[in-house]
Image: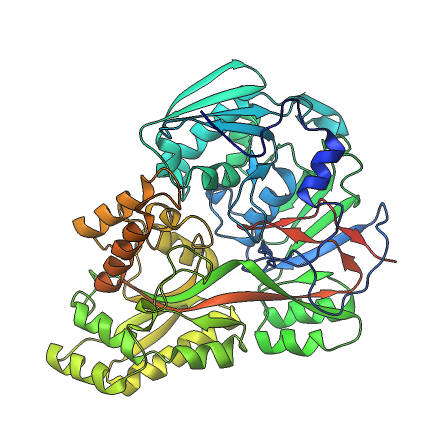
Length: 540
């Protein structure tokens, strides 16, 4: 059997575990899509924040653009969802933000079989779910791990890593503090799944689906939700990490207007906000009492997606013309203010699938774009969707629209409210092209092509079907590890399929930035863009 290098002969001592997680050194930042938590590669605040000694008590107020959607609980599609998951729930393992290497969380150690077909995990014996009225709830056991993984695999929830969870064929829960999972085949993204799935309470799942109750083992207890307005959380006095969290209360407010969020930050109404234009972030970052955070290690990507069944987009030459027409560098320079870099493929530079040569396949070339469109002949006007009130997506769409007009392709901007946009993304219902962010490329490469809505080879937002692409995705997925022998060849084949199908036209990797008041200290995040306030405090 192959043992994790974190395997210990005895359960990890609480304080030793806290030091291993790096929670003794407080970090700051905020996360994707508004409050969706992303991270710096070194896990440290980058600019201008006031230091200080952690103090107990007080509250922090967060502002994000998109509300909680209970039916999307197992997705990372809204700020409300990622805030609830990040504050209320724990996962079995946790990746540090600068590596794809599992670290203990609710699991203290694990043993992977040499053939990759089973994994045994030792579980923390001293964890309880949230109880009522601040009391400790029932103990966390191996049965809860099985329930959470089975629930995540349920098609009802549309979880993006559902296919990986569904590949678990057996659960041995005979020991309440140990579980053995069996698999249909090796899973190169197995630890990605264990980092992602929140451990949920079986006794309150129905209430979770209705948005009435969220019960986990995390540092904060869910207190209330006012739809389209506010979420509130209070301290979990029985959290398994000693003396954490520091804060007594957290408020999350839905603020759809970026300028209102910026004004609220300036006036002291909010402590940390996301979803601002990069120009505004730069401005407030240079103002006394505020700082800018650049979130390396949990990068997002911005892209143009195409429904290959839509009129005018079924011909790959049209999609190639779009790829040649888009001025990626202008978008990085003007919209992202340099906080990112141009790519043709979805991977950040540290990914084992990153390929510098293939990333230069499509550069801006209007002559080639016009020639391809001339070959195709007359085309209809194409609708172009993006999320309304998002300054980054709106500015990107405007540049892309102008670029395509120069090439001779007319697209009509059609902004959508966040809930409707997400519904169309998951349901593959876009009538033309669209722009948004995608995630998951910061994990094991297979995660993207067997999991993410835009890329899933089985069913994706573009309605793109290709046996060759599906085989390449499966080959990368069924590796025993992301760096196993043959992995480079598998990723090369996958990249070739992405460039050939071109159902998604990548623009660039995005290094997200957020603005915060210096009084907000120790705000952390996960690679998956979930806000983590375990070590956060309000500086005085």
